[in-house]
Length: 427
Image 1 (cartoon, helix red, strand yellow):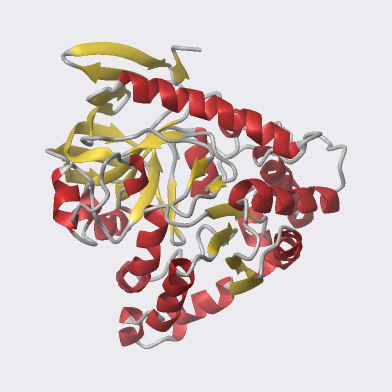
Image 2 (cartoon, rainbow, N blue to C red):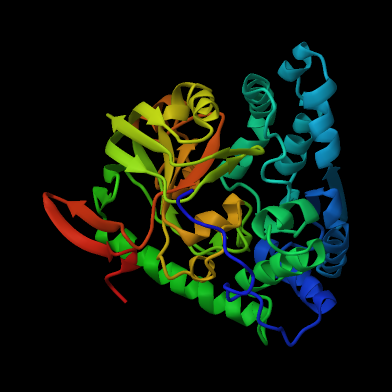
């Protein structure tokens, strides 16, 4: 692995909190509603969550109703029943997805419902299962969920992702600890990264968002044509889409509500040009995708498309991902995160993209966020492609930043240092 897991003793997430677990859980629920969603009076909320998240879902639900939500509906997932499908279902079952459910979710978003996803599944749940079946199931689910995902990627409604510690996830992150201590350590990391262990979490998020907005403004004012990443195994030029826009922290969604889509978040991000990415890049952290570990990724781009790809582990799954559709071998997002971010400083490998992507600069295979573009109203899908906006059934982030990676902004043949050894050059 490129990033070792560490013990709770070595990390800085196990310092005692002045708040009880129940208080911190309640604070996370409040921040998720007030900062993450900023839910509006009369708005419905649709939550998806693992079964172990019931106590957190109850806190979120309570705060949502206090904020004026008209109805909160939760759909629960269970790792054991998910695994049972791969063990016992007939082969033809893996081309089937609950389109009726996906259509209902898309309808809810079109009618104005807010969206919250609570993550916490076992990162390697499907280890040892048939990669072909995993790929087919993912493809079927992606197709079914496309209408709903388009609403999310267009940022048409307020949405948010938070995390819930679960025993299976905690055992993966802290394998050296007894189960109860591992769970407590993971919760501690979640609370700290989510900034709810401070005196005034809402005020802390306001200040954090201001810092991210200032960084995004600098990048927008600079109007770089491209970015260049360099370091061990990496020499990559990422052209930026015509009319790209940098974003980070809280943003106004299409329904006019300002929300924080990710809690935690340390990134600023934008839309790369789907045909202007060239060179080689190597991953700096493992990717955990749909229960499969993909490690030591190395790919080479030509004219925006991956033409060579390898991984020391999970290479077959990586190549199946890249073959999902034409846009899956191109990137739809580039995000910048300093190596000194709190999540990186914790030295914990969370094995969960929501956290690991906020420890490192990263790129995302697949679908672009059209919210990171200007002057696109009324454009057809073909016109968006011409502007460089990638289109795909997937959107999968993987990490390429570290304290050994430098970053430059390129404009009109000039090179401007942006990061050195993973840290911003400009304070």
